[in-house]
Image (cartoon, rainbow, N blue to C red; front, side, top):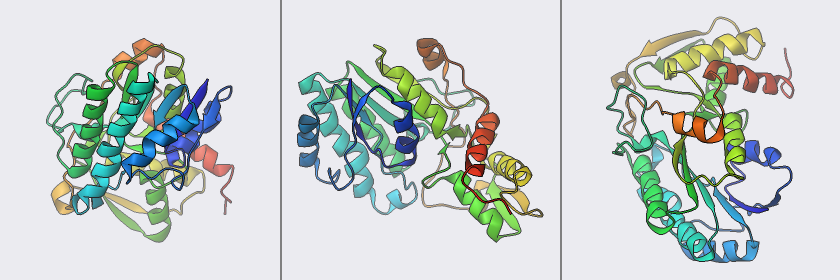
Length: 291
């Protein structure tokens, strides 16, 4: 099977590609296909002669999207319209990655795939637009896979930001009243690979197991990194409320995702997010000098 993968240069793509042994891969770069020019997308799909399309490409600068919404809209919504339309015309299966930010965060129990969407910010609105494009133009043989709080040992993410700040500062103040689930890009990549040979379609959720605040996640990063000599001792991590750290984009207070449908479809169970964090930090030890 030949796979066309948009966004393969991002952190999720870099975690996914090694898991696709046995597939023929077409991985256009940002120079090969311009998501700001929708008319470049269909020719890329046509030229690939792919059997399956995976869209990992996304505008993920949540706060910047408030001041440049047209960029988020172009990548997360308008480009997805073109992908969905062309995949429908060619009868190609499509797997698209979406986000917990399509929800408002007003619930106190995990969000199910069928729950109503009410994004709070421009980023979430653009990602919901992409979902609706697929539901309208490519309702069959398509998978919308929502995830949350994605991180890895590459790219730009909360883990790498925290490790850098822990080396630079002696005190960090981290928001403690937003709740979700940290998710390793490696565990999400495993689930994507498991979906490919199936006939599944519709909306699915995947995160690692458990629940945490950003403060909880930061404390765990520090504790696990400290025992691996990845950060210095003596860093104080303090919890703060969202109002003490205002951001341009409003975030959901609660965005835990219900994964039961994915677990049933693939016969898999997620590991706890802290165990997945340990695995990612152990990977970093293989390439990071220890002082």
